[in-house]
Image (cartoon, rainbow, N blue to C red; front, side, top):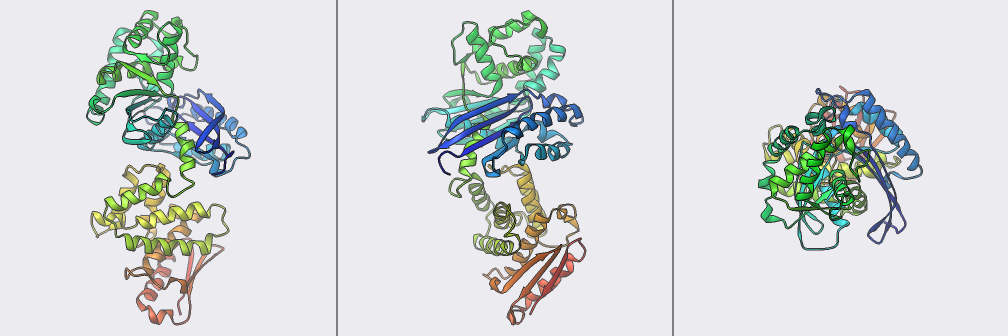
Length: 494
């Protein structure tokens, strides 16, 4: 990446949407602009996990303003990520379809583990280099992430379903603050976080950092009222809760340092924070400057190189974990991407889709770790449910569908095949699996693949069918399989 390149991250949080723009210089990112809007989308999620029209509209209007600011940016300069509210929303596709058109860039719905990884990446890059063992806590609107790490390495990551929006709505309805409400909210938070004690025992970290809105808001209020700046102490947190209870409700609350956008979710965020202090016996927590959006920016830098792209490392880790035959994985990957280049070379996104096809090909036998029978079904299930750092939920699902469709009947792929790029990827993977069936490097240079007007055509050089009769027969069977889809497929095997 060249010095001076502008990068942007869009964070679609449950409480606020944020836009961070920075300029890259020698491994560092200099902030150019930061915009935050309190969209409160999480409050629009009903008991059936359906996002209200009003909540979606607020999100679209905010993204329209962000999109205007991002005019002129290229896709590789922007990463937009959505978190817990859109992870939960049953109608998220309705929101995302319009949102991506408005913003002008893809929006990734990321898993809780990926959110935690990016949070730690953002926090660690803005802290001084140190060997200290860190606990990083991020209390979001509908989820709370906890990470144990050292230097730039996140060693343990978890995401828990509680946050400032969810807890405010559930335990502080109509903005009422009572001692009983705080007690109930904190007990409920401890019940959710109890298992976190085993994952992040206090003996394994030395410093606690708080990322994002809740911790920084509490720190600002404490500093504005005479407490030490740059830290949230246990005694200060207790004092703040006492002030809230004495005020009785939001309308009566008058406290220096409280911003208007934080006011509606204050009770929930503070109750979750105090539960964490009690559960982990924390005496003080330091507000961190970095957060999810900075982590997304640094991840854009890492993605410029296979050596630093965490997705590449994740694929290698999965291959090792599930004892994949590396030789066969590479053969299928090489053949699939070579075929894909023949039919997608003119597509502006072909490079991205070729890389994702290569990853899917390298993991196409991941399901054999469970059973050779219906291994592609097992593989698809693994990819849809595994914690895979660096990958968004849609990325993993696309890879899972490629693995599912690598062989067998195509009726199971009916909905996915509406996407032309996916159909091209799937054709290439299926052909690669066929050509590599003998688990040897095939003479695939003699096989040509073309695509025009909804029709795939595979041809071979003269004499190829005689040298590889089994492969020739499998290719003719493949042509029959595609007859039952909306795509046409012909084979001229010589």
